[in-house]
Amino acid sequence: MKRWNLDKPVTILTGEEFLPKEGFTFAQQVYEFFVSQGGVAMSPWGEVLLDMKGIQSDKSNGLGRIKSASFAAIKDVIEKGVVILPLDYYATGGKKQMTGMMAAPILIGTDTFVCVVVIIYNLRERRLYLHETFLTEKIPEIAASSLVRGGASASPQSQGSVAKILLSYLNSK
Image 1 (cartoon, rainbow, N blue to C red):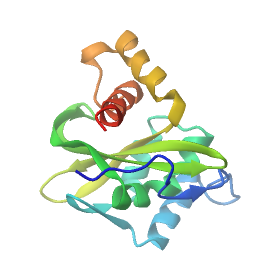
Image 2: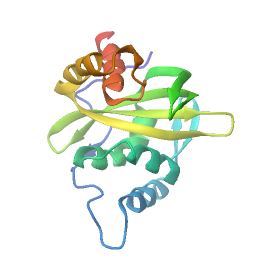
Image 3: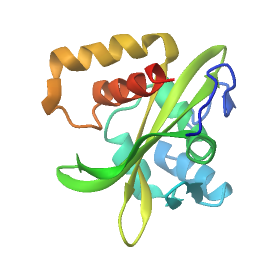
Image 4: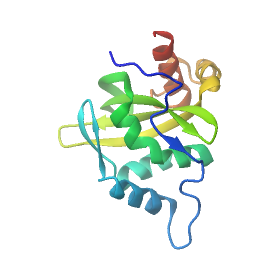
């Protein structure tokens, strides 16, 4: 199983990526960035579309400055990261879909984060569903909060559940 070192980020960001730009929505900026990267990323499960549909589904789960900037890391996370949740059927977007999770450390400014990308897999395509970005030292706290708020019934894609899956991976090293 491929592993990574938290001290070796797969990408380095400033935190200023995708700031408001006159005449462009956030989604348009990210989409243009994805297009400049070829619009796809190669995962262990095949080619993943980096498109407007994935941006919109991800954006609907909430955005802050860090998560917004980390859209610039998604392709590197998919291509250079590790599988932290193998493909299987999970409740995603209100229905059971085959999904998997990739993760990798990224540097934003001077802080190390772990970016997790959820990929939906079906016979036609693989696409970005959402991503979360966690400050490394906050992962245990966020994972623990999912036990209090969501428990076992929480969606595997809720922020706390994603952190719990990530923590489980990190603890298995």
